[in-house]
Length: 103
Image (cartoon, rainbow, N blue to C red):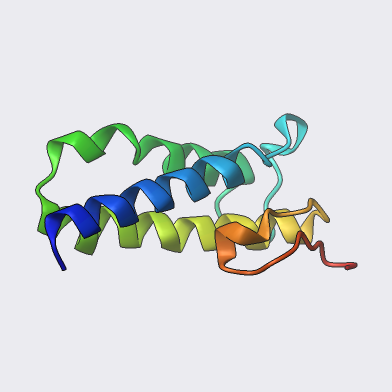
């Protein structure tokens, strides 16, 4: 993978991460799917905190640590949102249309 391809992938993943963070309802930050799970707000803040660190990393670390970590937590956040019946932009997950648990 070239550095240019890596950064193009990064930009795509950043856009998807921003889209899913925009779905987080402000009034549900304290919600947790389980008593041992992080709250919705804590998970969203953790995912958002990964964004500024990007410019300080090298290309290999960017792919192996930051992007993969971001994708993992974006998937986790999508599960939380679906459990709350909040529609998730499915292009963030590689799907074609917005779905909630009911749809």
